[in-house]
Length: 255
Image (cartoon, rainbow, N blue to C red):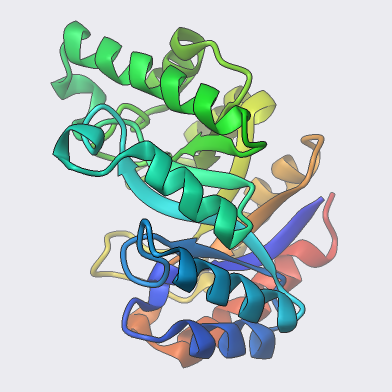
């Protein structure tokens, strides 16, 4: 089952209460709250407040988008335990992290294995609290290709490690579908958008045929997950509301 949602960093300049209102207006089901602005790491009071306003609106906390950089953030003053404590207070059952700070082609074996070891460590810590870890499928990290992501999951070899998915720039539909198929056993959530570059965001309706393929395949994968809008044309709430209509249409007949 795929539920609809929004990634809160889509609107970094908008307060949590306004985001909750927008998501309700859009008829979506959940929110992935970001750890950089809306629910800062270690601010347990804010996490509790955001959790309560989300639930009172009849919405779910889909995940905590922590932006914790594996094998990097801990050495730069951000203990993972602080991220985990915040996620638990927020009521998030998934923490999104970045698999390092460099792409797979730019990472040597020693650096790669540091990421592997740290992922194993935080996956183990989170598992003890009933929270799962999921890497973002993202450029500039070790999860920047289908092959590197699959390899990383095998290397870490931890039952509490999952992966998000999104179509990366330049990927054909065939490569995207192959990646989704490879990640199926470990697929967490989807980030949904339609744009060529971060500066060329387009209405999701223009990508409805493409996303129809992705959603159809994802719907066949066992389990529950969210398909969450991330970034919209001109960072405009009206663009979000328009894209939400398209997302609901895509999810209406999950098959």
